[in-house]
Image (cartoon, rainbow over all chains, first blue to last red):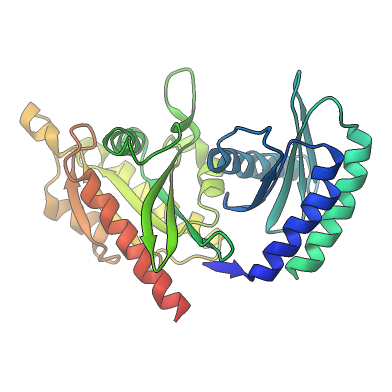
Length: 128
Length: 201
């Protein structure tokens, strides 16, 4: 069992709000690789069941990670699924954490990727 | 590994139902889902094959209330039991806090129980976890088949095969009828909570 301080969680939420929610993404979730939800923020546009989503996302990421190793890659650090109105972007923060953003067609994928890269660095620093 | 969220005052715990194929792991979760409908706010997630066998895992989150002001959220998972899915079983065990080993009491499944237990030991080791140290409950499932004339192993034979070294709490059960399913669940939750308390101290 592990935990992080209230201050660390607060800082992570500030980064997610300032850098990603402000961009227009519908929902942003930080999970650990066991499927626990560390932080979840949305703009009231995301009605998904976060616990199930986190379990599936962690499983999906682990499966793709195992596939990467089978083809001789260290990892596939980025996954992206495009839907008609909602898309999902997964990225690895470090060995423990994954960052997931759910966003609509009004958000540019390129810009989101740039922002996500910045957010990952900030979360890494906070997480320690 | 369980996660304590001090901000939301919440503890998340991962319990995995592990065991040989067609042993009743999914049926355990289905029974729990039905029994505690009011407490489970979401749908049970199942990733199945076309033949209705578990392909990746089943997932069922259960809120068990508050302890010392913290909401305790138990996340129940199953693994796919079929022999060929070991890579997936290993993935599901990542971060596990407690295990229910669902063994099949049918005599013809004796070998499968032993193989599954040995493979679980290896899979846990790959996550640097010792099977003898992790909270674990043994469930000897399908005891109801006795009434249908199916040849079953005795409780003592099951203990001899699977629990000599582990010395885990054990229940004969029937996931199909629900007999001892909730007892098994309560035991693994209490075992996991005791382990957490020790860890925190």
